Amino acid sequence: MTTVSIAKAKKGSNLNKVENTNSVYLTKQLNLWYGEKHALKNIDLDIKENEVTAIIGPSGCGKSTYIKTLNRMVELVPSVKTSGEILYRDRNIFDADYSVEELRTRVGMVFQKPNPFPKSIYDNIAYGPRIHGIKNKKILDEIVEKSLRGAAIWDEVKDRLTENAYSISGGQQQRICIARALAIEPDVILMDEPTSALDPISTLKIEELVQELKQDYSIIIVTHNMQQAARISDKTAFFLNGEVIEYDQTDAIFSNPSDKRTEDYISGRFG
Amino acid sequence: MSVREKFDYELQSAQEQLITLSNMAVDALTKAVNALTDHDIDAALEVIEDDKEINQLEEEINDKVILLIAKQSPVATDLRRLIVIIKVATDMERVGDYAVNIAKETIRIGKEELLSPIHEIKQMHALATAMLRQVIEAFVEEDIVKAKEIAELDDQVDNLYGVVINKLMKSGAEHPDKLSQITQLAFICRYMERSADHATNIAEQLFYLVRGSHYDLNK
Image 1 (cartoon, chains in turn yellow, green):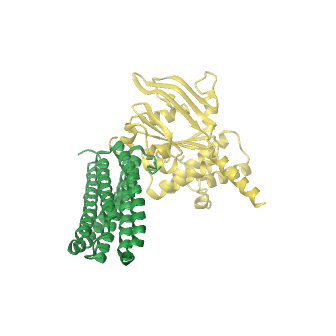
Image 2 (cartoon, rainbow over the protein chains, first blue to last red; image 1 turned 90 degrees about the vertical axis):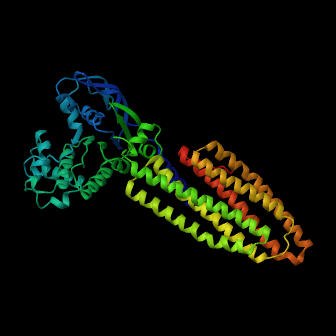
């Protein structure tokens, strides 16, 4: 009996080590121009599901542009032109018949500065579900609680749901914004420097939260904080001048990068 | 000032201290063996006394590296270099300890005439110190080809170790009155063999520093 269970346990542990093969986003030869400026050059990236993918690089390298392309938010900038493909769950998001609304329902986003609506905490979270037609108070209550729990802030705000979201701290506001993103049950969460405006403890809370969220979501995070990328991500892409210089397991990037430019950047010798 | 000038300066300084420590340890080993062959008790006592400096320098290197890791968040080659500096410092400090052990055996043997296996022990010493000196050079130059050659010399040291032990065992039958010296020489022979092993360890660390992966050069 014992032998069998050990064998099973071993088999189980091997299964856990199997490489994650499901792509959530597959970017192929993506180019992007702001007018004449060639901001993204021949980007090829395969982003896996239920992983944290960090995008690092110096200012102006194209990392925020790339993440905003994933939900087509970049198109809000006039004079943007793209070529190439971004397959989200095997469909090219640039296809003429692809619904941007549908894409943004599946792909939530959290920004650098917490940007709650000037409404109550409850209404912030219920905003998205209401837009999608949910009016039932009981269902909304459930969504609000589930989302706030998911963003690890329920215990801190459960007695203050009617208070204005601006009455809580910056770190709490950012977790409210994450809860707001979770309320529409997305598949992917994009985070554009989500902790750069936060204090160190709030930062660590968000980092811990990201680790928990990846069980259920795929997370792509742009960060200026290289130690943050090292701490929380599974894979890291290093961008420089609009190109992906290196994309690998985070452990490899931070212990033995294959490109000298990656090494110089992560060891603080430029950027 | 370049972005990491202070860090680079501190890193360089830790590496220079390591080279100093290494040279002190190898010098101590040579001084101990010379004290043995010359029956020079004063020199042996000096080796024991000087080891305090080696130990202190090792501690200083460790403290410096720990502070750099804590304060500068090094990654990739920088981090590997710091870890390797700590490990090589430990290896070299241990070589210093072997020199002390040999010095103590020298004092125990005193003026007694040395048995013939001392010739092979001197050969082992020549090989071990050559390996240690060359591995320091290879470390400074980050020359992994040289590091591999050094590791290959270890086989010769191991062979000599077998020869000496055999000879000492035979001496036991021929000179039952010299069992004490035979035991001391066997220990000294072991310290030489271990010193050469530490040179091989350092060569392996150099591979890790340069290539970022682990190599077993004893195969």
